[in-house]
Structure formats: structure tokens, C-alpha cells
Length: 185
Image 1 (cartoon, rainbow, N blue to C red):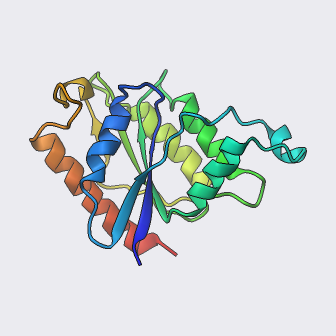
Image 2: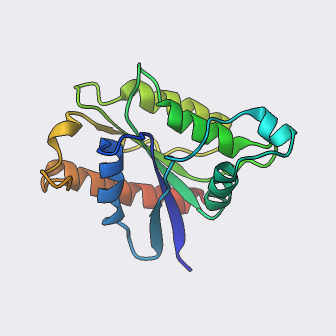
């Protein structure tokens, strides 16, 4: 039976580089695995009252159910103000509730960050890792995936160009699969 890895892109923008990276990774899936992009586009801002009053919006319930079906997660994040975008933090919060029923627990993770600038979303990558520690998600340490000048990596059709970045991403995906196998329960 295939193991399913969820790919979460931390951007809502239609032409999001994170979404483009996620799409490129879909073609890198190894045998025995299924990669599934999970959209965050319709996820409302989480409010604890939803769970306290049994009024959880359908989009959050659907998101939680989908996340329960994945065995691991690759997070792809841009950087907003030296941290993760609100949509990605919101997804972590929505999936971590109600207390004691987190959809994230013990799922091996990887963090791929990118930026049009030279810092490659270093701050977002490490802020996300802090949350993953609390959520009990073992996160792959090596290789670290920081993609700089991401705006130059895609052709006019939004396809990842051939070259060193594509080769590096394939190596990172392969390393994640090894990491996943070592850390999956």
C-alpha cells in the first residue's frame, strides 16, 4: 500500500512560487508513495470557539479529514516579514485542534522555503520548524532546502526549469523519503 505525503504550499496567490514548487515535486514521487497537494485556499481563519461550540466550518472539518489520511507532510513556504505566512500558520492551528486530536502528531515533515531574494526564506523555514517541534512532527534536518531567486526558476508556463535546482529538489525529495521511512510510526 502506498504511503501518502501531503504537500502544503503556504501561499494563496494564484501564481504562487510555493504552489509551482509543489507541482514540480509531484513529478518526483518515488515508487510506493503518492504525493497529494492539499489546498489551503478556502480554509477560514481558525477560532477556538468553533470547537468549543461544535460549530466547526465545513472547510476546516474537510481539511482535518484530508490531513488524517496523509502519512507525512512536505511544507513549502515563502517568507512574510521573516516568518511563515498566516495561511500556513492557520493550517497548523486548525489541524492541531481540538486539543488532543491533532492531525499532525508524529508525521514526518520536511520544510522547503523559497524567496525571490537571496535569504531564501531562512526566517520562515526556522519559524515553521519551531511549530513542528511543538506539534511532534519530526522534521528532516538535511538537506536544508532554501531556494533563492525563486522567481527565476520557472519558465513562462510555470514549469520548473531543468538544471541544478531541479536536481537539488529531486535529491531533497529522495532524502525526505529516506527520512520518512526512518521516522514513520
